[in-house]
Length: 153
Image (tube, rainbow, N blue to C red):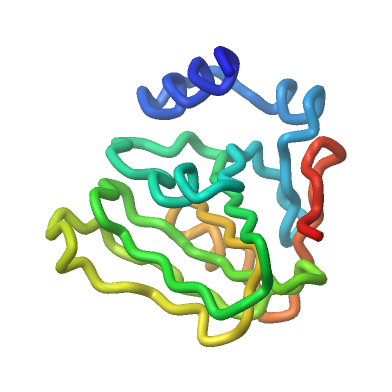
């Protein structure tokens, strides 16, 4: 728990510490489009609800992976999110089924728009805006999970 709080604090402060060694050591990484990202995991209701709210920066090479209890249409919003993000939706087989690129920050509270997946999804990956364009991601791209991330059942 302390480790998660420290990592969260570093990411929130935009720390320049390279976490690539940590990503390899503890398996908290995903790979998409040939690029590896160190990720925080949100796999319960409270973590999924908070997401990346109130952060001023998401360090390069990092993101947040949301793991849902079942595959179904998902909808995310940017309530209290201060950084633009790419929201990538993946099905049970971890294939990219929908993308919401360059979603803008929103400080309008409950009036913030939602960004639906429009296809059933089990995993959602949030990265800095522009990453999906940079990687030229297309639907069907496969998300690879690090060894310490338990796939949804």
